[in-house]
Each structure stands twice: as structure tokens, then as C-alpha cells.
Image (cartoon, rainbow, N blue to C red; front, top):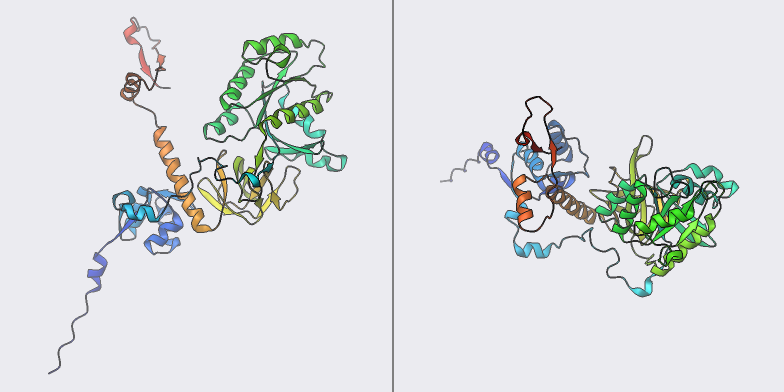
Length: 434
């Protein structure tokens, strides 16, 4: 007698069983879709419905990814709760963006590279005019039309040697990049007006330069002015810890005039001499690593980033990671507005092809394939999230604990008092954060 066929399992029973998916603290949208084995369109639609506008290459945190996964019928679990030591060893972390760029370098492959110079100084002392004068002396009449191209950095040639100048918008940008570990400056040029002397922003610039631990060259500008007082400026600089060579120090001072172009060649020559002491070298034959100097969204070209190649050679078509985004370099433009195919160490270029606008100071790194790019992006996102958590405002109890443990020697407080007639005693003063 034939056996009866077993009844098939009810489909509803399968739908009720949720699949548990392990997710990291941050994950790229494309990787989330693969982890859930669903369409990227479904994931992005779920994020949009939550009010989060993202692209396939952007990262989301664990909480956001979990909400989308739950909407699609999945349960989620944090990666650190289930990853075994053996699995951690099998999947090594990608190279940290904070590691030294020159590690594992073969000295035999190193070649001389141009120095990178940052110009700082008081707002009215002619920093921009000096930068324009330096660049103008290295632009031929045929190329003069390109001098207006602004990419945040440019490279000149002096007696057959190249020098890169960073046109930073101010001391804040210099400090912000240094705070992010973006040590891109080899020599700092401090611009001081001969007719105005050391001013508050001059002192601020000196402190920034010393904190960055780079050598200083003083450009004593506006020496063509009738009220120029060079001796007074030299004495003022010494009062603030910048002792020039004439006074027995080690800081060169070059008198210049951005208006008349006097001393411009001497300034560039002095910068090169100071840079020679450091013996600046890089390996041009490795995949490029550098820094984002500035970035913006261009209406016609999309995300545009000015990058400074620090080692290796960047080529058109390379796959690069910058911060939490990656893409192929589809075009490179130099400071004269010309399309170029490659950028060697210390050369600044604009790159096009990134899906998002990176942040100034982000490491730019050439990677081999998209898998490696996603791994680096995920790690950068984790580091950025951890840094943001570490920088959150501390409570008063936490600040007092740091003082007690010797981690903080100062407790800065802003006191705000009421101006009402009821204010009669010091007890009305209350600390508050502004």
C-alpha cells in the first residue's frame, strides 16, 4: 500500500523565522545589502523612508543599519558580540590612516622631492600678495591666463627646482589639518610687514608653526614703504621666540616687497636651502598616498578635491580612498587648469571622480580593488565615530575627576551673571557652558 506524501511545510512558518545578521559598528550601504542578500535599492529605499539620504558607497552606523534590516525581516547583532579570536586573526585590519606614511620604505627607492611650503601671517601684512608675486615670477606670458586658477595649492619652478606652496585660507585651516595628523608642511614662511611689526595674528602664527615643529623663514614684507622699521620688527620677533640669524639665532629673515617683486627670488632660494637640511625624499614608484588640502561640490563637475601627493605617484584611473568615500580618479587638473595624467610626490592636483566631498586633512590612499577600498572606508568610519565619541562634551563630574587624577591641570569656566536687580551676592553667579 503506497505511503501518503507528506504535506509541505506552510510558507508562513518560514517567514516567521527571522535570520540573524551580524553587523559592524559602521557599514557601507552596498555591503549592508550584500550582508542581507537583498537589493541595494531596497536598502536605500528603507533609509530614505527613515529620512537618511545616502548613496551606495556611504556608511551608516549600526543602529541605522539595524532599523533597515528589521524592516526587511532580519534580526541584527553587533559584530563584537560574536566575532571569535580565530576569525579576527583571519581578517586583519586594514592599514590605519594614522600610521606613518613612510613605513616599510626601501631607502634605495627614495628620490628627492620638492618641499611643501605654507605661508602664514597677519591678515594685512601681504600674505596673499606675496603668494601672487611668487607665482607671477614663475608664469610665462603665454601662461598668464592660468594664474587665476585656484586649487588651494600650486607648484613653481626656481632654477630648475620645484617648490610647492599651500594657499591656506587662514591659521584655522593650518591648525585643523595639524590636529587631524595632516603634517603636510616642510617649511613655514612667516610674513611680517616692515611698517606694522608683530601683530596678534603674527603671534598666533608663530605658536601654530612651533606646535607643528617645522622650520621658519621670515619674509619681512613691505620694505618699500617709507615708514618701514626693520630693526623694530627683528626685536619684536625675538621677544616672541623667533631669533633671526643676524641676532645669533637660526631663523633666516629675507626682506621682500610683494608690490615691487624685490627679494622674491631670494626668499624662494632661502626656502630651498632650509628644505635641503631636511633631505626631503619619497618613493615615486609606489601607490600614491597623500592628503586632501581642500574639497568642495562643483555644480558642473561634482565633488572636487585638491590633494597633495606625499609619496608614490597618483595616476588617472587609480582607485582612491579619502576618508569615508572612495572612487576612481577620472580626471586630474593642475594649478594652471591643465589636465594631467599623473602626479608625483609633492605635487598638488584637483581630482574628480569621488562620489562624495571628503574633508580637509583626510588621507588619500590608492588601493588595489573595491574590496580593499570598502575595508579602509569601514575602518575610517569606525575611527571617525570613535573620535567623535571621545570629543563629546564632558560632564562637570568627569572634568573634576580628570583634575583629581592629574589628567587636566586647568578647569576653564565661563561665568555668566544675571543683570537683574535681584543680583546681590556672589552666590547668584552660576557656571554655564557657552
